[in-house]
Image 1 (cartoon, rainbow, N blue to C red):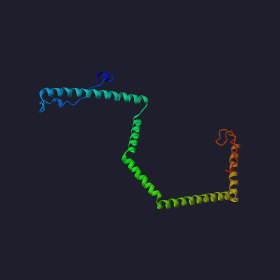
Image 2: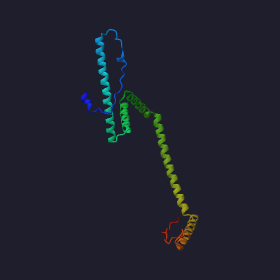
Image 3: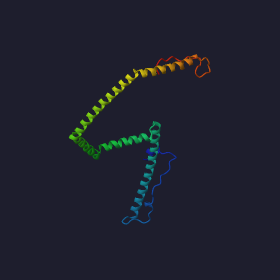
Image 4: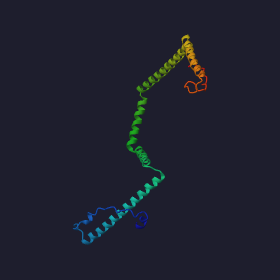
Length: 196
């Protein structure tokens, strides 16, 4: 044990305190001779020393593991995700989860096979079809009305007036020769013959 852990222990490691209150007893327990008590105390000291060594080895291995994870770019969040994933997998394999899942599947099967469910599903399906048809009709009516409005004389008159105002504004920009004026910098804006 000593030779295996020697390479892992560093000079900066400190001893972990071990509770020595049990070995500090002065009177021998009943039924033990002094030699037996001394042998047990010696064995206890060895076991406590081994525990301290194992704690040091464990601390060194945990530090080394942390360094490796840091070098690999693994974060605490990655470890948490992995732990949660494993826990969820364990839950899914548990008897309680499997029993609850089976019960819910049975309820779902009974519910979807019931007459009330089938009637509700059919009613909602019909309502959806009727709503879709109504919205389609409304869209067609609005489209037709907008087309009629655009072909009306009022709209054409309005369109002509807007076009006239636009040509006057664009025309005044084209006639401006002041290069410092915000409306005419010497460059002609591109012609746009759209009604708006």
